[in-house]
Each structure stands twice: as structure tokens, then as C-alpha cells.
Length: 110
Image 1 (tube, rainbow, N blue to C red):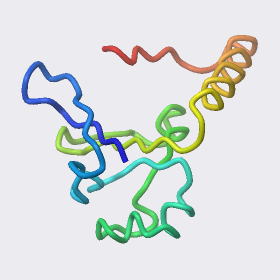
Image 2 (image 1 turned 180 degrees about the vertical axis):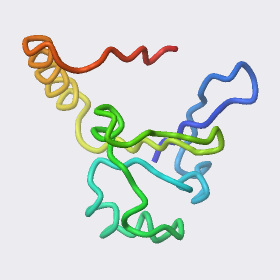
Image 3 (image 1 turned 90 degrees about the horizontal axis):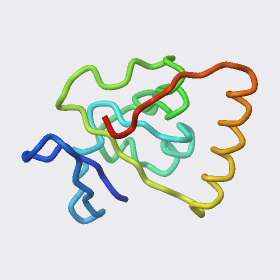
């Protein structure tokens, strides 16, 4: 599972592999795409967290969850499936948001 963490140089992000990403990377509040699946797979329990500790990317983007409130919090992204599927669905969602005039602009490089 790739893990993004703050780099000590320049404040950017570095990519770490599953072997480098310790269970501590999941605490205190991981984000998941499927809470039930993460709980069933034992990913949260392995980090000593309850099944309710995770939030989804959707909740973060809609503002339903405030996101990181502490710089020590880690963000974990574990892609599952094929990238083109994510891209196709994202493009569809983006187009619908533009048509409806909803959503918010996010600068992922800031």
C-alpha cells in the first residue's frame, strides 16, 4: 500500500511502499473508500483503531469531514482496481459537477 508522508525537505510529499509504511501511518484518522471493507479486512484493527475511525475521500471533498486537523496526521492512499476506471468515473463526475454548477475547485499541487 503506497503511503504519502510529509518530506522533511521542502514540505512536499514522498511515496513509500508497503514495506516502509508502518501501521502507525494509519493513525490517528485514516481515509478509506469503503469503511465496511476496511473494517472487514482488518486494516483498522491492525492499527488499533475502531471501525468508525476512517473517513472517505468523498467526505473530505464534500466537506462532511474536516480532514487533517493536526500536521502529524497521515494520509494513506491504497489504489485498488485499474487507473483508467478511476479516471473515467472522475471525468464523468467532473462533467456533471460543471453542468450543475456544484463542487469546489481544489489545487492538488498547492
